[in-house]
Length: 182
Image (cartoon, rainbow, N blue to C red; front, side):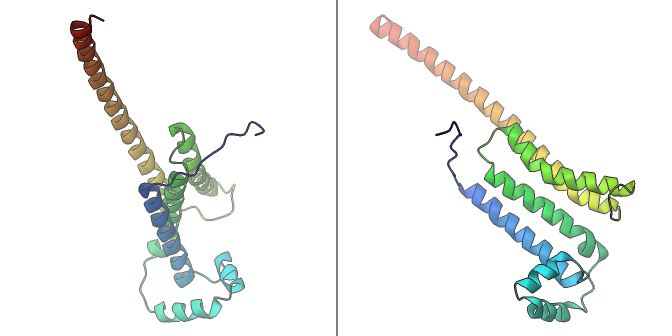
């Protein structure tokens, strides 16, 4: 069929949980934006288009007296979005080669990190914030560390499995040789 590789969507419980957790983090990041940030952000226009303005205004009114830290308002959503992306892409690409998967998962956080760094030099519009940089970076670094440990652990299990099978094959060979003269 035109030489294109066919992919089957294989969903397992781990992937389902990663997608659900990613969606929850995405919703939490959006909720923080909608409740506590300026109405000049694009997300308000999107919600207005969906007819949600009055609901959002009502929720903003109910939460206006909450004392929310600057970190929660301005930095935490970045970390939530970065983590959500990593979880969802990890679930979608869970069957792929480790290198391809890591590149795809690292792509958006890398762009965000690069953008934040370029803001510090005035090359990209925006206000550089070291805490934003940490919120973009930390989920990616943790993901790469976990994947590295998981890969090392799986390699160790594969080696042990191979050694166990080699021993079993050796014993089987001796038994076959003694019994059947093979």
